[in-house]
Image (tube, rainbow, N blue to C red; front, side, top):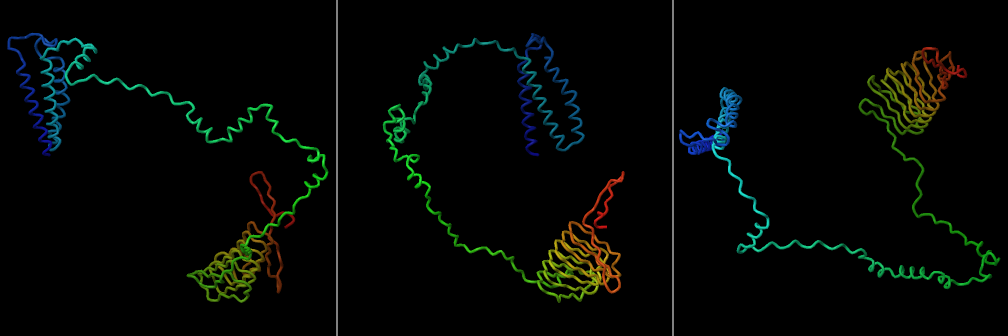
Length: 364
């Protein structure tokens, strides 16, 4: 705020000085001579400036005074600047335009500068640099490569270059000497490559420790081999079972459980009572599953060989299969089971409005 007040004071002082200079430069009251093409009155430039101040600038000042505060202070500074500009325009319009002095030639200017004491003439510009050498490294390269010079010297001999060749007699020619041909056909026995001293890599898969534990609400049965007595007896409805990488083993799950997943297993048997969700078989081979109670859905994906033994209560379950083969469902009939294969081949036809897919006749 102090800076703005100081700036206003400086502008007001400048306006006062310009008004004094303008007042002092005016002629006597009776002198109405023509100045800068204006015969008395105000110059057109000052008149146009007054119109601008009385219209837009005056409206700006009125609105700023209504807002007051810093806006009003800034408006007063602008007003002072416009007053200083008008005083300058008024003073300039009251003076005669200066007449033109002749332009001095360049030679006279240099003569005046050179004739003065202590002012020697400027030095001439330096000459332009010469052209670069065309073959600067030619001598160095030839000196550094004597074999190259000798090669060009031999090539420059022309027909005389054949004089240095040695004559080959008939007994030294392979096509005229059978003994040389026999020597050429005899080859030295090839050497058997010595095996590297590094130890051979083992092709056996890495062994993992078997897992059989309850982790939170998830039963983990992993890496079990040749185990036919695996039993999960204490189950709850919210628990799930995940069976991974088990071979030649059998697992029995008692009670009711939420879901069961069999992943990457081979020659594995599963017996369970009830599942309220889904039983999934993924990426497995030669799996046997027996349902003792109920299960709503059984899903088989990417599996080769899967036998499903259903109970009387599980005959309404849905079997969903994809990318699998050798699937069979065994339905109880009396004291025995009857086997039904799950279709693997399908036939799709267009009935005029949609595609209709059904098992191929070979599976019907």
